[in-house]
Image (cartoon, rainbow, N blue to C red; front, side):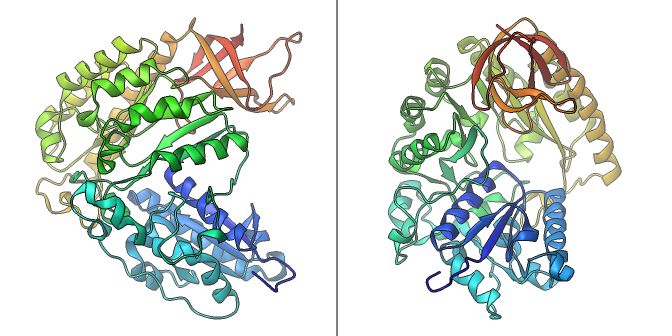
Length: 488
């Protein structure tokens, strides 16, 4: 901000998924380029910018709690620097004015369209002005129905995390080539390859507030990958709402298969990890590319959601137990060391005990490495909200508890099967103090944050690896989904 001798400070507080992390780093890049100083602690910032999550009920509550916690800093006087709290992200985009009315503690609730002008908005708020809260809309309607007509129409549509600037905005202020500033020093980073979703799952509201599917051009993805490598990143975690659809709006549904080798060849990148695969869209050519490209890890994040065919149809999804087990057989045939993770939704309206038995039978046969278990809750504006057969909350909770107990047993058993395997561990932290965890990282089939960790057992004669090192090891023990490994 020209003319200001002391930069104003902003802290970004990020809730939710890795896609939100990319959005936060884009906001950070924009603000840093406009002269803001980025700080880690909201108490040290003039503005706490809270990037909210609006996915499920618990995520919404967590986002509200984070906003209230940040707002509480404003009441501490000289004990905290914070003067303003601003909500952005999915919850803000989804509810906008409604959220602002119910949460007066927030100084503004801003949607995705505000991201390009965020610096001006925050300055206005700190100078005592008011910024109008976001008016929600169905973002699916902002782009053409035909995917191939979208790229040309997207220039005027805000797409967080794509590092692009809307028509009329001064691109030179933010780049080129990358609109992003790292907010951590982890040796891995999420890299967004697409946004939005064209699927119409009955339980999911994401397409309404994230919009129709839009792929990032490969050149932009590669430019950001090279920039991340220059920032010390060794593992790229490709994220989107649906990575199997990548390229369909660019006229080439096999574009991911050709992009993977180029990403893996970026100097400094040791691993490329693909996430968010839809089972109904997984192509044999994609499995071949993932298994056959050096540097692409044997990690398959497949969104099964359930295994009962009738219930999946009711969810507006495809597949079933037999089809899913056949898919897993194809995955493991191409990549015997493959790690597979999924999420399942329990208690969907109309779910019977027979449906649940079909799900548990699938889980018992699937040999999955990680399973996230979610209980159904109504989401505003979704088809499922109006279906008959809603189950009592107590029944949903009991089923979640039952499936979670089974999953914990099965994934622990799967981790035990890994004992004796040779692995490579990406070291993410090293603390050899008496209270530290030692050298900790992840194998190729352990995704970031939620898929377990691997602790390295080091002898006194062995050199201590550094954060970012990729070290060969052998798995010697397991604890739940976590592994213990010795260097080899």
